[in-house]
Length: 188
Image (cartoon, rainbow, N blue to C red; front, side, top):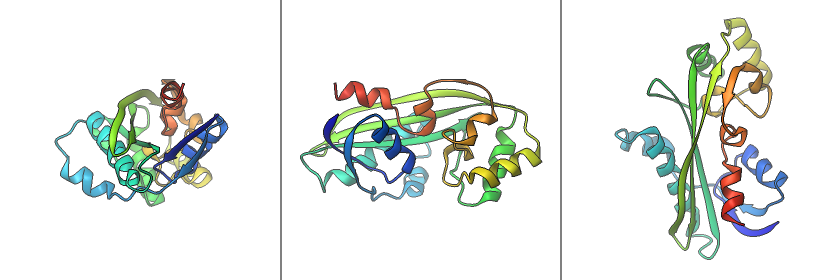
């Protein structure tokens, strides 16, 4: 499937999802400060925040590719109204996983498609996951094996992370950070 679009991300998993689906595309790193945007927009719901971040990512790249579709996507993990940060260090990943252990949480994926600096589509998608009750040793072993740094929820669902769950209700691609079916439907 040859579509002329740009993915506003350098995420390896997002690139892999689109490539395996047969899309031909370019990538460009978005020029936004996610932490600053999150701080400035604390009053937004997690859904609104995920869409805002997806739009800002797409807009930041649109100026470089004015005649192409730009896809922006952002993923947020939430449990009991707490937004979990994407860990930079293994210790934070372990802390997040301990907090999620045995509980249900949501992965919310915001999507924005922009062309000529205009929003063509914005939407969100949600998956519900319940993590198994995990011991500290199980969490340490997982973090060492998968190194889920900068991963929403502190796990890589596309890798060993899927073994951490009691149940999952939602699209696996949404859990991995890119709502593939919505993108396929848009380009049909």
